Length: 189
Image (cartoon, rainbow, N blue to C red; front, side):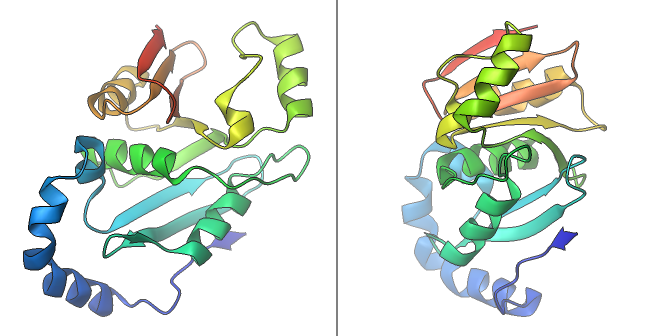
């Protein structure tokens, strides 16, 4: 299943909107946090899930605003695939993910390993691994575990850390990076 949200936006319309607002928005944009500037004037997220077979490639922010309908689609995509439970994902984490993706200059979509986790799922994973936090930000919709086949864990972690906007966990043996919008910190190897 492919989720491709456009909400009536066409490429020409988006480019026109960008061109029309680029000059007037520039001063405001320059005052934005560094990680948000890295995400771009038009923010796009591209992911697929090997667990569900779904993919998403969508613009979720334009002209200084998040697109509520698109955020709902992203919430559904990033659901706990074990239980089907959803939560409102924190858009700040999407910004970190999008900014990191742009910094890596890659067109490949992220492989989403874990987005939202219900408390039950988190407890089950915690019972099997010491690397799962008891109060994981996954349970608040503030974290994602991601992989790219074209970039190393080190490259992904470096891009996410450059955002200086949240937590970055390197899981080299499992080949993924954890990105969250919690306190700035890093761990793993």
